[in-house]
Image 1 (cartoon, rainbow, N blue to C red):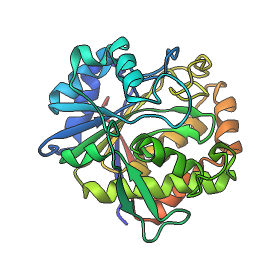
Image 2 (tube, rainbow, N blue to C red):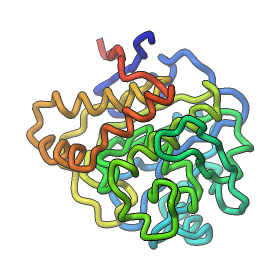
Image 3 (cartoon, helix red, strand yellow):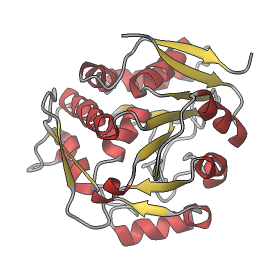
Length: 291
């Protein structure tokens, strides 16, 4: 497979996000879903509406989210809508909680390594293309969160999240599933969204506010590394692999904690599984737009 192109800038501004997107040379078709993380109550690290406003307006997108499978302020549509208003999303954008009503869309993953189905909010059927706008950081369960996490856990309905966490078994405590089975399930689920949009999808990863914890954590730790920059690609596997490589190659000593978390949680299996299912390639060319 040909190397994927991953574009990079050290400039962390709303304008640079648009510049990166334009470098991709694509125009997302029809009605565009912008998948991002709305941020749990109490979290301070998530990407703020003001930072993404220019790119969302550029693609004429609708901000989309799904409800969680754990207690908090985003596990019901009513609470999630209130929090999105509180965090400023509804001030600037049309907002759609994809699984606000059932039934879920059931996607088949015939060659899935761990799971053979994925359950997503039914409103996703209303969109022709997607911009996946990810905050790259650590994750208490997946090791790291980037584009593939947004595609998998992020796009899954509340039930779908439990299904992925349980590696296909929702009968017990899904958050105590064997770790490799869980992260492979994330890779499986991510591949099904890539297949669903059939190329009408683009990815931006912001390596800022790099905490050990996800934006779903209301008590997330402070960033452990300095801001690095922003990346864009048409390949979710390549963009996440590039971010991981940048972390490993960084001279920032704060990387040690993040690397430890990635390795403890077997996070690389997310990338590996998604690649095996044809969602993308780990072989990439990193192209700086700053030069």
